[in-house]
Amino acid sequence: MSKFYYEMTSYPRIFKNTYWGDFKVHDDDEYLSEIFKNRNEFVEKYGIIKLANCPNFGNYQINGEREFDHVELYKTNHDFVLITSPYVGEIGSERDDFLTVEFCKLGFEVLPPLYPYAKTFMKRFAKMMDVKKFANRA
Image 1 (cartoon, rainbow, N blue to C red):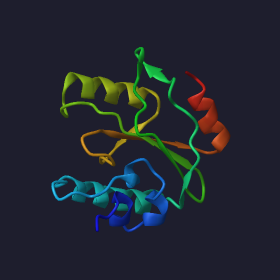
Image 2 (image 1 turned 45 degrees about the horizontal axis):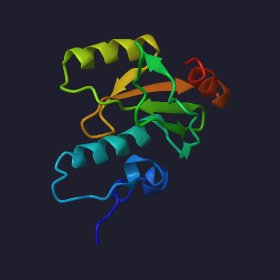
Image 3 (image 1 turned 90 degrees about the vertical axis):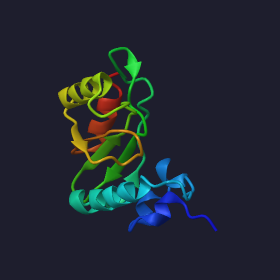
Image 4 (image 1 turned 90 degrees about the horizontal axis):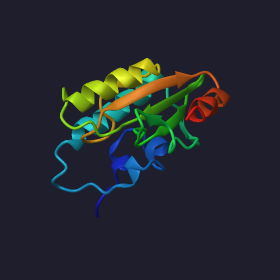
């Protein structure tokens, strides 16, 4: 029987209800072992305790495009951690470089990828109210 992505991590309870976690593992998913490892390290490094309800970033645009993709919000004991993983094409491409600069201007940092074939950016917020204010800046 096929397993779901979330079941392949050390933290299935945290990733079970994510968009990413709902995919089934296939034999040809050779890139996924790195993603599973990165997700485990993400939880451990940032003290993630649970998935939080994320506000809608559907209208948030960078240079006229909706670039917030695969958005997830997590709760730690002290704050909230927002990730987004847009597809950037080839690493080092013009699009990759552009999005890296733009997300860094917004206070994000680059993480090891948490989605296949996408680049992951992370930003921390002290309170949920701060996340909502940021999401509504669109």
